Image (tube, rainbow, N blue to C red; front, side):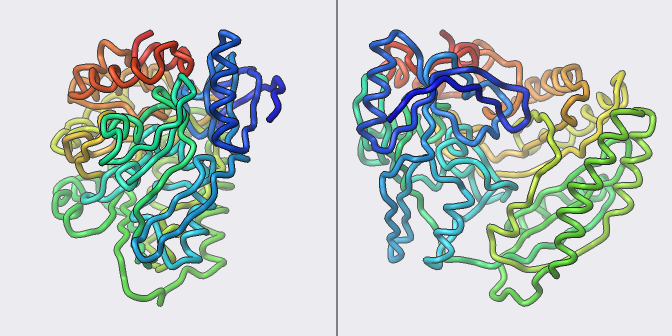
Length: 434
């Protein structure tokens, strides 16, 4: 274990800091690093892959890089359980599971995050009957602010388990996780353009009838692109390699990046570009291994805000969002993403206690975004929205506490496990209180 000062930046480039980097290889070294930070009177934060847009990983104290943490890998195929180091990426986990005939029940649309980073911020995919990824956790091990190693589950340290599955890194350093998996499965993806009005009119049935459904609204238009993913018995319609490259690399990344640069240089062209994009997308159907259908490459840099809302509030939120977009003094270059999750019981999960619809708004890196994000946040907050912990937002502890029934319970666990606030940083001070 060594420590060297280094500059860290997240994927979007909107968060950076300089800290003393420590790369532990064992749980004991993680605990020693926590105690060393305490002795030095400095804070310590674990950083994952940098795919949060907030300052969640920012620190000027000590930074833990868990990429070399080797706690061992254990796959129990009979019970469909996998135990992995917290610093493993979702991509590596997906490949590991595939070799054992297993898979995660759901995923988001990228797999570059570390397992711990994805879970700690409430990362989710879409599926009306599935909660966020943290609902798959059946056991975890963390190092507390006093250097103690705790193993937690629904039967052991239950309150810590309820807090740490979406813990923001505030109650301890996750070092190992056990996840419940399912047998490997194939998805049939169906993507089609549609009118926004028709999708909203049929939305309850759409969410109920498909395993996974999401849609993208193109600003300045009344058009959306709908994507449904459903389990099928055989991979009998694989996407041709040339079509995958054309759609997911060339059009979705190379051409889209060029369109964003053009729109940033000549904002008046953006509505036209959006309209052309909405009309240019064609229908396609294909099958594939679940994680390869869920996850696609994202090379165009952006910043993002996402809110989880009560499902019934979605039409109102979208109507208000369209009004906001039309009234901005600048143009919005990215489509708006809409996804769905089921209720769960994790204290700081955005889906705690309710079925949710998620609205994610984006803006190309370097383009103005704050007035857009603030205006949407005001609407979302009034509708009972909860901000995604890894996406930009402007809420503080006073406004967040009423949105989470177990907020006080979470803070009590934090007080007990990190009494010296070793794991805090400006972001946590704002959203949880100093």
